[in-house]
View 1 (tube, rainbow, N blue to C red):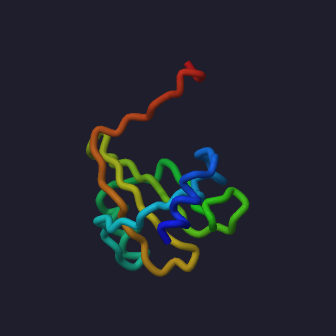
View 2 (view 1 turned 90 degrees about the horizontal axis):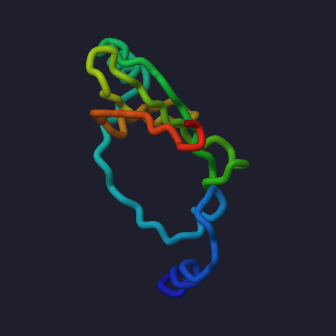
Length: 113
């Protein structure tokens, strides 16, 4: 395993959809709250969160991979700058809240200024 990690680390892979899969990442345990998708959707609606953006994770971390999961960002209608991000899979069994964040601000790339 150590040799495999060294081999990956010594390649000239660039960070991006193809290169990101070449690093010896460590799986992490992160705090999440999960429940049946209907329950999470009901609570988000009851607490006045509205979806504002979504993106798909794909198998192998590649743009050509099948959809493996979806991350949706919800913004609070009640608290300025408060967002929640959720993750769910195509099987639609559970939906998990990945994080609750405050003071959210979109960063506009300088090329768009």
